[in-house]
Structure formats: C-alpha cells, structure tokens
Length: 288
Image (cartoon, rainbow, N blue to C red):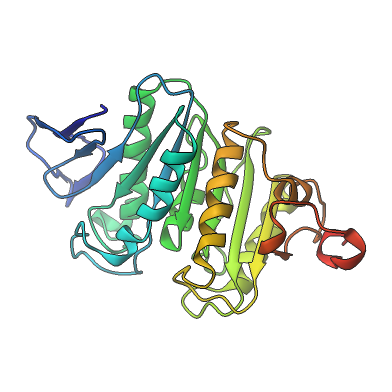
C-alpha cells in the first residue's frame, strides 16, 4: 500500500452495530508515505514493499470520548517523532502509525456493553491490514499511554513478537495477555508521571512475568507523561528496542539483560542504562 491513501470498508469497526463506512474505495498519491482509512477517520499510515519486519505505532487518548481523533491531535502528532525515527533507522522494516476513530478508550460502550474498546478494534483492523501488506513478518507494537494499553490488549494477534510500551496506562486489575514463547515485553515509565501510574505499570510487569513471560521495565527519574523530559533518550530507547524486538538489529544490551531477569529483578532499571548492561553491583534492580 506504499504511496497510496485508501478509504475502504472494514467490517470489524462498527458503531451501534452498523459498519462505519458504506464501502467503496478511493486512492491518491502521497509521495513515499501512505495511509489507509475509513470514512470515520481511522487511518493507518506507512508501510514498505517487501519488508522483512513491521512496527505498528499506537498513540494515547483518554478514558471516555467519542470525539473523533484529528490528524492534529497532540497525542497522535507526538508519535510521529518515533514513526520517522523508526523509518530512518530501518529501511527494511515496514513502519506504520495508526490514528484511532475516537479519542477515548470507551470500554463497554457498544451494544449491551460487550464490544471491545474502540482503540483495540481499530488496532486489530490495522494488524489485519499489515498482515495483508507484508504477510508472515514479525510485528512489534510501540505504544504510548493508551497506546501501550492497546498494545497489550492485542498481544494475542498472530505475528506480534513484542511490545515496547512508553508510560502505559495499565489500571489496577488490567488483564495480562496470554503470551507465546517468542514474545518479549518492555515497559518504560517516568517516576513523576501524573497521568498514568508508574507503580501500576510495575505491578503489571510483575504479574506478566509471574506467568512466565520475558519482561523488562525501565524508569526515568523525574520524567513526566509527555515524553518531553530527555526526549531524545525516549526516542532512541523506543526505536532501538522496537527494532530489536523484530530482529532488525540486536536488542539493546541493557534491555536484553533485564529481559533475562526473574522475580522482581530488571523491573525498575534506569532508562539511561538501556543500551549497555549496568554493573550489577551498583544496580540492585538487576540483581533482585
């Protein structure tokens, strides 16, 4: 789908039990980029022909809102720094960024409260599109805030080999995904985040690891939710980790070291140590 923007019917996404589009498709040239969207603004941008891997970038949102997500929404625009960083770093990787239909998570808002949250439905649709574009390749999910929550909710999808979640919104009791042996999960959180809880993301990581999954978690002291505190560190960490998860490069040494830990070790590692394994004697988080 590289170089095209397509509006098309996809039956998974519904409102009040009705499809969000009536069908049909149009396309126009977009240079070296692309988007796939339906008439209610869910949009998938990116792709690369003959790619050997893929990364899907997922933005944040809020708990309740049926306001449409605009292309200028800050939570969406924020992720373009990561999207473009991934594209520059890995010419053989198909990188995509998804824009949800609605700004909210909107759990249980469908008929009789049974529907998936809106961004989860949108992200599953995006994975279907990616699998059609580049079948059989490993896929990593890179999500911020609500995008991190969405990533864990679709971890069961075929082809997903790992998640890199930045300041993820993981409420108390959030279900942990069933995992496959090849999957790896990496979380990073600022300790001064007032929008999502670093404490709860550590609890979630502990629960996921207790099931036997390979999990690493990093912290950036004093960092807040918007990823603006040491923004280049957040970007470099996310790009290197996501590409490592799909095999485009080696997993950063500090991430690999944390993923090998057991129990509570490797779940509160200094984010600045992601690229090289720290001296265990000076980093209790790696020694347990």
